[in-house]
Length: 317
Image 1 (cartoon, one colour):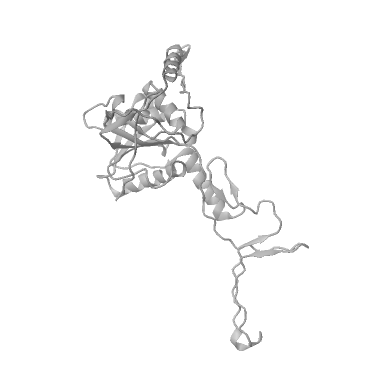
Image 2 (cartoon, one colour; image 1 turned 45 degrees about the horizontal axis):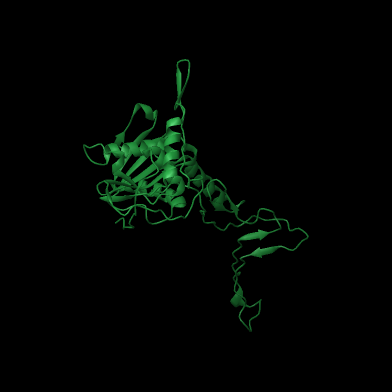
């Protein structure tokens, strides 16, 4: 299970043909002027060259400060300021990335709701059995996840996908798969002791003002989880443990993080992954979590010794 953190993405830029520009006194550099020179021995006034040569003009470099590509620090997209097509693409991608991909719903949905979800609902998609329209929407969401989690490994046909939907947008996604075993992380004893101490000494998760009760999220961290991504190897016990549900990936749009969506997705997967059976937390495992993924898993499972497994890359079709 990998948690989400921004890395670079790129929106392809397209060429644009500017309208007439009054040339300044400085030299104008035309980028991408393409034309064929006249053949040797021919005259410019010759009938053979009666047709005008075609030129393709991409950009005028007039020393403007924003000529170079710009990188969006929030969504990671790279685009060309001043290029109408590029800026429109960036605005669309930025909105989908920050708030979730638009989703008007389907006629036949496997819907999970709860009073604690407020206006949210979770829709489950079974890739082996669902319609092409359902699978195509999942692919659209996965493309957004791949911006941060890497390409080509998240989905295969045996996966079950859980989509968190709110205000006609998919604000979160969990991808689960059937597994048979996993391995427990070897957490240093001092980490486990500190984690349990923090858990027992944590203040109440709710605050009451008159008749209003507000829920408060308490975050506990393991030693190696300092809020940054790391590439450290995960040391596990040699003996395999039985497991049923593997969490390949969880993604929540940035504007909806720290609202409990990932926890709701996990709870829903436990309730519905195996028909007629509520899975115990000990039957879930994460696929090679990052440091922040381990923070989330430790908070959810109540221990630093998570069950993990290695997700295999399989073809979707």
